[in-house]
Image (cartoon, rainbow, N blue to C red; front, side, top):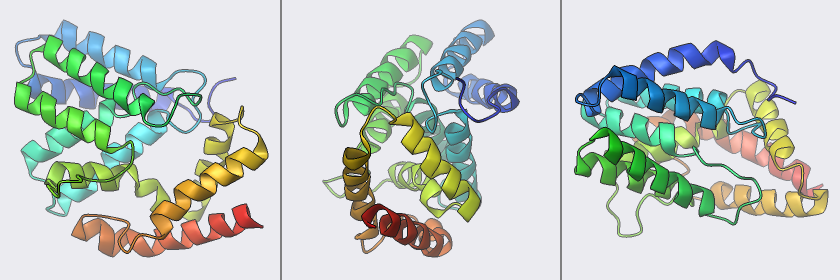
Amino acid sequence: MPPPFADDALAEPLLDRWLDDAELVAPRAGRDRWLREGSLLLRGWGEPHRRYHTVEHLHEVLAALDELRSAGHLDEGQALVARLVGWYHDLHHDPRAAAGSNEQRSATMARDHLHQLGVDDRVVDAVEAGVLMTAAHEVDPAGRHTPVLEGVHDADLWILSSPADRYAAYRAQVRAEYAVVPDDLFRAGRTTVLERFADRARIYRTAHAHARWTARARTNLAAELADLRS
């Protein structure tokens, strides 16, 4: 059964976005290689077992990064790197995998693929760091809160602040994606994950997201946690 979302409606515009960015970071690779990589990325995001980690999520992450760029948090170069993180951060996703292993695998794939395209080592390092950050959503334990890491952190968590109907759909998608997990274990695990965000003094790292997204995120988190605990 395919994901409950019209993936095809986003595939073409997403591929166009990828081609624009690939030309900037890997100009020598050429259009054929950009297309092959873009097609591989979209196939990954379109795997049939996915329900939440689909091209819809990718589209939302990129849109959130656009918003943060427009708000002045990211300059053009930083936004480009952040978008590359967005493309690769859930490229590998197995709901049965151990915590952190999906992000580790995705980071390895990002490093390998970007190197093969001829992307600068500094960009590859920054993309790898961004992908790994999404495992625990801790920007940097050493305190180096770069604009790229902060932007990716917030964009990946934009969904917590989504409108009520989108958040309800997100909840259903997450449950469907983890359908193999029994209800009691799912509720316990989901509660632990959401409490970690709800208990933070600050959910979002950037000034824009903190000001614009926090109130709705706390409302959504409180409502879902109340349901999980009932």
